[in-house]
Every structure is written in C-alpha cells, then in structure tokens.
Image (cartoon, rainbow, N blue to C red):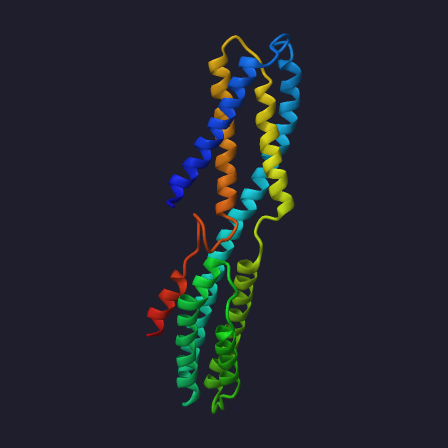
Amino acid sequence: MNIYVAGGLWVVGAAAIAALVAYLVRRIGETDGIVENNEAAGQVFTIVGGLHAVLLAFVLISLFDGVSAAEDGAYQEADSLVAAYWAADSLPDPIKTDVQDLARAYAVTVADTEWPAMVDGTEVGGDGWTQLDDLRKSVSSATVSDEWQTGRKTEAASQLWHVYQARQARLDTAGSDGVSGVVWFALIVGSILSVALPVMFGGPRPVTHIIIVSILAGTLALLLFATQQLQNPYSGGAKVGPDAFQTAQERLR
C-alpha cells in the first residue's frame, strides 16, 4: 500500500473514532458541571500532553538520527571498499586481480543479496563476511618490493578495516527490533490518555469540541505512523536503499 494512503488511513481512522467518542460523550454523557471542570481537566491535560509530546519527540528524533546514520554508514562502507580497490591497484599480481575481483563481488553481494534480506527483516547470509575475510587475507599476503607498494598495502588494509566497521554497524542496525515494546506501550497509552482528557472538556459548541478532539487524535496517529515507518532504516517510508553500493559497482568497473 502506498505510504501516503496508509498514513491517511491512520489519521482519518483515529480522527473518526475520537470524533465518535466525543459525540457520544456530549450526546448521552453527564453534562452537569462539565464546563466548570475545564480548568481542572486542562491542567491535567497540560501535564499529560506535555510529557507525551516529549516522549514522542525523543523517539522520533532518535529514529531520524538512526536513518541518517544508516545512510552515512552505507556510503562509508562503499567508499572504503572503492578506496581499498584503488589502493590494491599498485600491488603485484595475482594479489591485485584477486582483491579487485573480490571487491566487485562484495559490492554485488551487498546490493543484490543482503539488502533485500535487510528490507524483509530476515537474517543476512555469510557470503559477505566470507568475501570480506578473503579480501583481508589477500591484502595481507601481498609481497611488496618497495616503499610505495608498502604504503598502498597499508592503505588497502586500513580501508578494509573501515569496511568491516561500517558493515558491522549496518548489520547491527538491521538486526535490531526498532522501538521496544515498552516504548510502544507508553506511546499508545499516552496517545489515548492525551485524547481522552479533551473529550471531558465542555463548551457551548459541541461541533467545535468534536473537531478539536478529532484533530488532536489525527495528529497523534500521524506521529505514531511516522514512528512505525522509521523503525527499520532499510524499509518503510524513509528507507535507505543500496544506492551507495550500486554507485560503487559503477566505479569498480
């Protein structure tokens, strides 16, 4: 389903339910003294709504930072792989050819095999680790004859270390559960309480009151939808694609 359609359904559904509840409360509920209770209910709403807003903001900012970090990490991994490929160009054959072939194969494995697995949330196979370990062994086994080749060998090994670090961070992020169940419980219950308090407000214009409650419910549903979409940086609305490794494949050709 299109992300905008899905988000719209979340917002409209929450707004409709909140509007119905507000209507029923005004229609069949006890109305004596409800206006006089606005001040007390408003003070409680300020505390509950404020705490809930802080929690939502903290979670969303953390998730946005996670998406940005995942994208930066993918480009760091791909760029380091290209740098190792170029550094190996000065090494003697057959090490040079082995390293470059393995680098190209690694880029293809990440983009074509590992990325779909991360999108689906399934376990990533070990082919990438095997190729990276073969790259490390090939560079380590290179016999150099001068200072220039020694520097290039050191540079290739250093770049492969950066590839390893970025790869490990990528797989750790893909294997995480996103927002924990406890946080989801707090977000959902907090949203319900934040909407329930304004439902108890009173006033001479029921339609205005119902519209206000439905807008609040729709807004909270939109933020919860954004949280759900940002849980996995490699899927959902703000997913990080394999663009970095597709670009690396072009460079490695």
